[in-house]
Length: 153
Image (cartoon, rainbow, N blue to C red):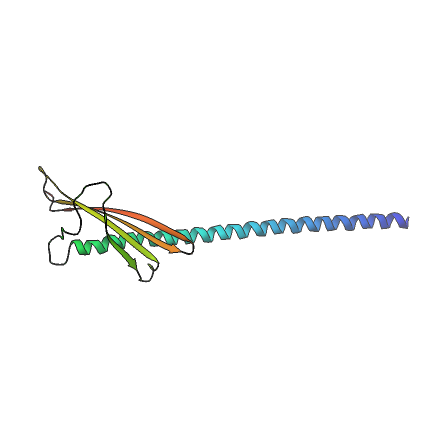
């Protein structure tokens, strides 16, 4: 009898060990899933931040060019943007930003112009700015298109 009771008790210990290992495996898998989810979330946040910074760099490139196109108390600077000859305007300016929030960001700005003909008159200017920002091993870029009509009638 003693032998049978000992045999049953050792089987129970073996079952407890198997259950403990199973529970440990489940907890480890849950921990791994949580770590992956947090890592994916951190990557998504970094992606959003760099994308927003690239968009702001593109907009800053447009604004910088606009101050050159339309100097304070002066007429349109028609010499800055060449005449329209193709769909993709040529690069006229490259800006590197050092301000907080735009460090490691650049803007490449293209523009061209078209003198409108009858029945319209005036100048149509197309500005395309591509902002790009580096973060670690990744680089994000965004493009902004602005079309300007000067004296259009």
